[in-house]
Image (cartoon, rainbow, N blue to C red; front, side):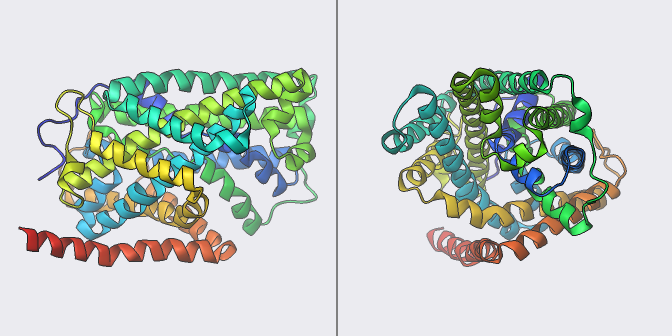
Amino acid sequence: MTAETSPAYLRRLGIWDAAAIVIGGVIGAGIFRSASTVAERTSSGAQLLTLWAIGGLLTLTGVLCYAELGARRPQAGGVYIYLREAFGQLPAFLFGWTMALINYPGSVAAVATTFADYFCAAIGLSPALWVKPVGAGAIAFIVGVNFFGIRAGSRMLNVFTLLKLSAIALVVVVGVVLAHGQFGNVLATDTAHPLPPAAVLGALLPVLFTYGGFHYLNDLAGEVRDPQRTLPRALGLGLGGVVVCYVLVNFAYLAGLGHAGLAASQAPAADLMRRLFGERGATLIAVGIACSTFGYCSIAIAGGARVLQTMGADGMLFNAVGRIHPRSHAPRVALALLGGWAIVLVISGSFGQLVDYTTVGEWLSHAFGIATLFWYRRRFRNEPSPYRVPLYPLMPLLFVGTVLAVIIVTSIHSPGDAGMSLLLIAVGVPVYYAWRAWQQRAA
């Protein structure tokens, strides 16, 4: 059985819906927190802004590669589909094992808890009593909306994407006002303390992680209208908007707080707003961050459920997981499974280490996913493609090389987390063969 069975997904997402998925999947809570980490590892505002621009360009190389892959195989499942065709069922299963069953629900649980933190702070609820119920309730609500199909989920996402962009615009305006026109200090460089290459890569790590999440649109490719044209355009438009937002937000942080103030801040957006509006400003940006994280959860649940459904339709999970509802054309069983497991993680509080353990696996999946492009180019050499990544093979090689360098640096700095990530992937191997053996006996 394949993922393209009846009832099937309906192609209801236009270019703006698809671009909103890219923006919402990338911009979560990271930009409101990780800027301080990057500032700690640099010595001037010019260095910091340069790293955010470089990170955006490097991520764009991966996005362009995903654009060609999505145009070649515009089906739900994304990387799972590419790995299955290029390298076989086992690598595809290992991707699904680590991402759809571990990383997606772990990330959703972590970000839903962040949403609950900011939501409770904004309306004055006690975090100790309400964070877990609010986080679990947010996940249940998102799953419920997505039960009605991709169009309902997309409408909700568009609203929250608009709200998060409004919050970012507010931060930028406040930073410009606080700068009092002294923009030269923001762009001043520190020629006495240039960053050595190793330090550049270390400072680039949190930048690249903050740019993560651009792959969710490929998970939902089976529901995009005219995908061969829409996917490349939406990916480029969405990530281009993200790069502009990230550079402007960091400029605002530097303008309002200064480089040293940004490096010392634990919540730069709140500190920036507090300087101009007091505690009301901090509360207002808390609402904006809550909207941003809520939108991310919606995309991660929708995308992850499509990967689970595709695996179920392939026989890699129980048949019920692979079903698509005949009226809503939504993978309801997969949505319930993913959302339910994420709620368990929120209530138990066990998601933090799980996300840390699967970070290396996530980036490995990106590297192997992009590597399938070489197979497609060779296997279908004479087949015309609606979109081809420019500067091939330089762009995919640059992205894969950068990702592998990030993994190496991460393994050096966090050998325990990297080792556990690889162990979780390895555990999937006996699970795969045990599942196949059970299927053969049941046949």
